[in-house]
Picture (tube, rainbow, N blue to C red):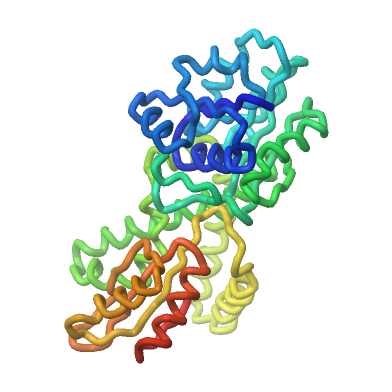
Length: 367
C-alpha cells in the first residue's frame, strides 16, 4: 500500500489518518475536504501529505479510501466513487456510526473485481471537533467495528485490519443490522434521552427559575451528550430510523410499567427497577472506551474561599498534568462546593488525584 485517500478532514478521519501515518510513515496520505481552509490546516498539521482537488481523480491512484463525512453524505460519496474507472484493486471504508443503509448500497454498487467496500465505525470520540482536535491514539483500546458486505473476501478484511492497526483499536466483525441495533441502544438512543431531559428542564424553568441553577451539578453531567452537533444527530436518527423506533417502543413500554408502579405505590416493583439497573450499571467495564466519549472527571470538595482553584491548578501545573475543563458545582452559598476537573486520559486523572492527596487536605472522588 502506497497511497491512502481521506475524504472528509474532521476529528475522526484526521485521527485515523494520523494513526495510519504513525505506524507507516512511508505512506502518502491524500486529503480532500469541501473546505479549502480545512485542507490547508490538515496539511500544516501533517494530518495529510497532499491535497486532492477532486477525490474521484485521486482515488484512481490509491490503495485505500476512507470516507469520513457525515452519514447523510456518505452514500453520495460512494455513488461518485462507484463511477470511477479503476485500473487496480481498491478498498473503500467509512467511519460512520450507522451501517445498514451504507452496506446495502455497497452490496448493490461495489460488486466488481476492483472494488471492495468494508463498513467501519471506530467507537470513540472526543468532546472537541475538527481536524485540529485529531489525535494519533484517539482510538487506542477502543472497539473498531467492521461490517463487510456479502461480496467481501476474508483476506480483504484482514488487510484492512492491518492498514488500520496503527489505531491500536480492538477490531470486531459484525453484521450491519447488529451494529445499528447495538449503536442504537448504547449511543443513538441515549442522545435522544439526554436531549429530551434538557427540553423538559427548559419547560419547567419557565415556572421554576431555580431549575437552571440547580441543574449545574449532576443534571449537567448526565446530559452532556445533548451538546453534540444537532445536524449530525438529526442525520444519524434518520439513518437508523427503524432500529430507533423499535427501541423507543420498548422504552415507552418500560416507562409505562414504572408509571404504573408509582401510581399503585408498588414498593417492591420500584425497588427491583432500581436494583436491577444498579447491578447492571455497576458491572459495566470501567476502563473500556465506548461509543460515547468518556469523561475523565475528578471531583474535589473545596471550601468557598479565595485562591482555592489557583492552589489546586497550580499543583497540577507543577506536576505537568494537563486538564481539559474545570468548573465548580455549587448549589448553596457558604458551604463546600465541588470542583470538577476533566482530563484527557484516566492516567492523568489518577496522577491528579495522587497530587491533590499529597499536597492538599481536600477530598477527591470519582463517580
